[in-house]
Image (cartoon, rainbow, N blue to C red; front, top):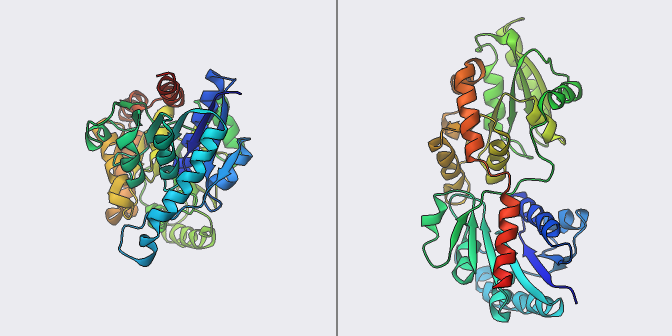
Length: 377
């Protein structure tokens, strides 16, 4: 029987995508490994894991509700049932190791691995560790983190290594060829500076409003273009706001704006960008730093434990970004933060270099190596 490794990271793309990248790195390092995933029927893993070609073993779990409720009373029994089912998978597949990446689906695998004596590794994407990972880390063989500040937040129970956050396979600086392809795809002018703006797949109304509010404020609009992903379901409102703002600013006083609802080819969007405005989720920061892109970060203010602000502050301390609080963001604040990066080559290049120093393009391989080392021990 082949040796097996099971992974779990569910619910959101921030947990699923790093786990998929590590699975690919494990396959590259050990083609003989039997790699599988534990997940639910509700999270993104239910679609993304099978699409990537990996087997998914479904378990029934409940969200970790932090507030007292009848549903919270059912969590312990549901967790025990799920961990028992996962323990059966671990034994049946001859698992020699496991890894969890956060989300409530991670706890059944961590508990099952502990019960069966299977060494497991925890990977934490954000600067402030999530509840599931904090619990799982207590019995882990080792913990991998993205941000240096996470080391002290996890305590000293187990070895902690700063590996960075694995990014999607194939993401790399494509140079002039990528920029030319991006220009053709998005209808951009290759001679203009490009500001890429996005707020996640669902968009961010505050960011969308700031883009509209910035029109008429840029000092050299004829040299600037904005590629703006408005978010699913927000395109119509964003188009109306942009048209009204452009009309108020007057002809010739606004940059070229290409607004789209969603960007499938983020690799080409990044290739076109000189500066990026975005939320500060862990995956976004990992991609920006691997590519060495200067950024203006607008942390999502309702993230659990305000972890997006903590993420952004770590990057700012490294000199790789500037931060604008969501409540402070408007057209004027957007221009004030982004304009120096767009038009001052020295500032932009210095921030780009700092981003690259922060980035960990080998993060997936590092985490895979930790899993294999734990399994060998």
